[in-house]
Image (tube, one colour):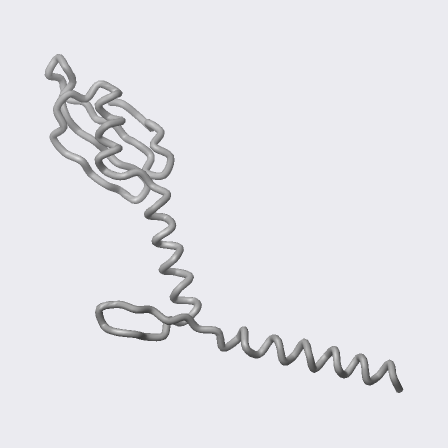
Length: 110
């Protein structure tokens, strides 16, 4: 009898603690006022912001390209996974440097 009461009590305690987590929401303060943010939307948004913070910026990519021999930058293209910097080297020849957006590693110099 005592064992059944403990099992029922433990099961009900576990059920009661799981319910509030299912209804967990977050609030966002912004230019449109206060609004509720659904947890799955917040996860996607946080993931995007985290990805942006983890990658190098355009200026840093240009600095890396200049250290690889680019003297004059003509164009900077941003693709899904890399920056492509086109320009001229010190002799006036065309040069293209591909740089990984996340790590900043030089992928190719053409």
